Amino acid sequence: DTLTRVSCVKLTEINLYGNFLGPIGAQLLGAGLPKSAALKRLFLGCNNLQKEGAMELSAFLPACSALEHLDLYGNHLEAGGARHVIEAVAACPRLTSLHLGGNKIGAVHSTPLVSTVLRVLDLTQNELDSTTDLVTFLRQCPALTALNLKLNQLGDAGCA
Image (tube, rainbow, N blue to C red; front, side, top):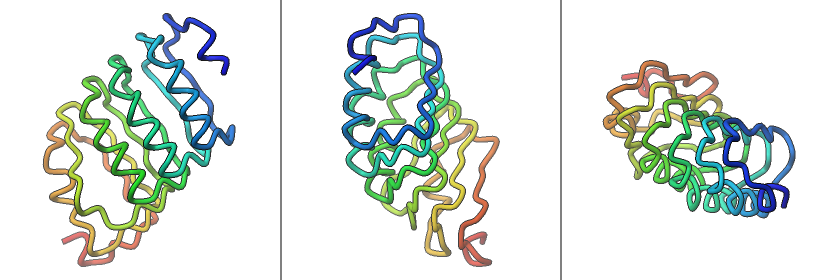
């Protein structure tokens, strides 16, 4: 509720890591963030956002035109929630760093990540396995220089 009542025009970083916001907190955050045109770094890790919270995020992320770094580590997004975030990221022209680790995404099949500026992608501990088509998923990320896939279950076939 605080961000909806405060004009955050000059705010460049918000760190709400580990505050258990949940989907309703994501909705309230979304009501206040469009007022923050300067926001560059948003840390929302460990907030139990789930798929519903990811849907709320996807509604307001495109309005954060200056956003460069988004951390959604450990929010139980699973495949459906991650898909909403991945689609919204395509509308963030300056996002260079995306952290989706610890969200139990599983195999990434249907939604390719589209970003010409994304340089860092963290998919740590997401239960990715050998059926995950990383080539198709990452094909449209030509600027990617760092990819973190630790603690997944890719095996030999997943790295081929």
